[in-house]
Length: 173
Image 1 (cartoon, rainbow, N blue to C red):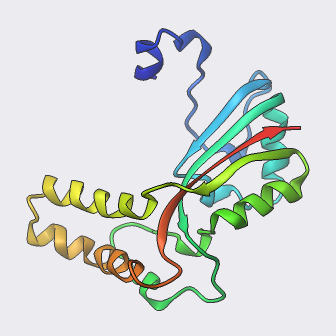
Image 2 (spheres, one colour):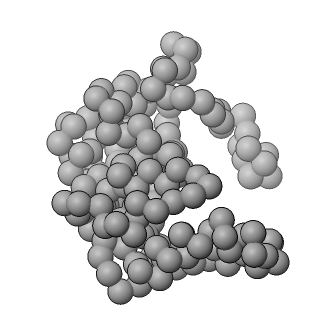
């Protein structure tokens, strides 16, 4: 919202935070755009969610998803991604950009405009570790809590599927 205020468009912006799977009040319809950052994997595959999101958008409205993902689909989650501590990585819900494209296209309510791995998407994982590592002064506690993620990032450098980020934009039909 601060950026909207800075650009003097806060009157055109409706920031919402909550559980979209519980629905929104009826007055929240006819949005020009919906932006989902770093959350879509947790609810985006639930039955009916794409249909519901389409009801929130004006015809021609845009949805944009910016999300962590794997670069390729896999039959079985590699063992390295089963080790987590501290926070729930939910890797079992991660999919490749192509998988998300196919989901949106099969839905019929959206025309995918763009869906691809973000340039530098793999490096963003490393940048995140570096940022928090520097903030924690690379303490033993930080390394102990984040060692599993560092191992996954290193593994991803030469193996597949590897951790990355993607962006999808689609217009409502």
